[in-house]
Length: 307
Image (cartoon, rainbow, N blue to C red; front, top):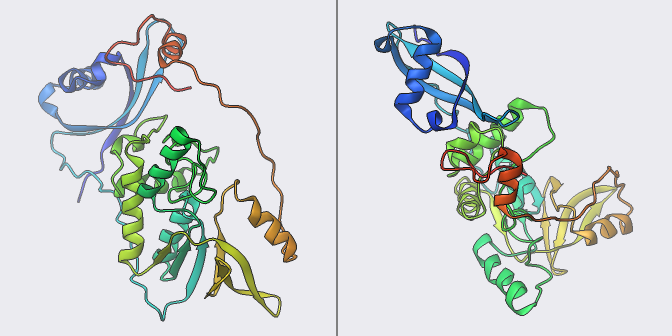
């Protein structure tokens, strides 16, 4: 019978986290067992406690001991189904996080996603963003808000949610890892993919959707809904192309104001929700580190502190 790993919670100094032998020693000391009895271990969760003057890492450790078979659980492989023209079709409007994940979930269910995106693919967006920053020229369909990957692709890379649904959050992070993100995002309390890494991950998500038979159309703006007998049967693209499907998922983000007007004009009910409005404030990383860690410099063992 395969053994499941044991778990402990320990607190260690920052330098110990980066020293495998030092961490092993801390685990052995905590368990009060001989060194030879600890077969293997992994960090499951990692967070920083900077409330006291002596900063500590809070770790949840999984481990195996002598006499047990080491059998680390693998990340569950997503079971995407191959779809084709005969499969039920669902139009997904928008290729931000919501649209991409919707398309992947549809493939799990054996439904053919047809993703339409008003902007460009993630690499081509970069040239349009350069024009904004250097020449102050804005492409209304390809900018920081619109294009593959959504609004956060070229502006941050942090992962944050107010949801308390741990299983769903874990599944989202695992899909990121499946497509090239570091496994550290499964461990760290404040997960951060990084803007420099996100375009490659988004590209691999697109490749998965296409590999299993989904479609993705860029430079394709939703301009109307096709409604027959009070039922949506398709959408109009760029005022000249019609795509039919069994259902439509709107994953347009908060910046696509024209979609709200279109829904209103077509007498389609929209449910409002509360929203937050604010300003972006930037501070030097060194200042945030000083405030968080209460020291002039964070040193080599502490990560950049989170806002």
